[in-house]
Amino acid sequence: MNPFDLTGRLAVVTGAKRGIGFAMAEALAAAGADIVGVSATLDPEASAIADRVRGMGRSFTGHRVDFADRAQVAAFADGLVAGDRTVDILVNNAGVIRRAPAAEHPMEWFDEVLEVDLTSGFLLSQVLGRRMLDGGRGRVIFTASLLSFQGGINVPGYAAAKSGVAGLVRALSNEWAGRGVTVNGIAPGYIATDNTQALQDDEQRSRSIIERIPAGRWGAAEDVAGAAVFLASDAAAYVTGAILPVDGGWLGR
Image (cartoon, rainbow, N blue to C red; front, side, top):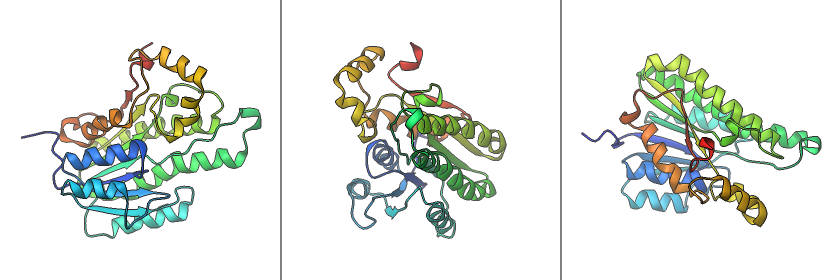
């Protein structure tokens, strides 16, 4: 038997339109999972990720949800619970980052980042987790960050949210591990996505980042995807409450 085989399982991936979420949804489908893809800007009827997943012979259902709107997130979660299939894997990946020095950081930015990056993931985990607990099986995966361990620069809301994600992973794991539901996080390092475009475009900052990474390069979204498959699979049945860095060795320096 292949412990990484996800055939027949249903995975919900938030932030699936592009970047890390796209790569994780694609990799989970390649491992056999059917996908529910969600994003604030995803076209439910036609998208690149839908084409990619269906091209592998898996089913794909798309949803557009504003993760800053708690009512929309709650309605989406309730709709999943009322559906015909039980969600086996929840990947809380949707996120936003706002950059400004702490002394000038607008409170509306701070509130938005916490709502999208932390609160929406808790809400989805709470609602879908009840169903998983009833069935005695489930996988919940959060996208954490290097800033779950560090403070960053000019991103106080993001650092606070991602530190909260790490705490939430441990809190949910403590309660759910004995009932068959594992909860883990992935902490991507400096990955070349839209969220890090400003850093990539800053030649001096980008060079200093690469010099600090033992692997000697920015990561790609695909570098994170394998970790998601592992944590979603039976191979990780005894892994819970963990934050797995995928950072080219950054935290080891």
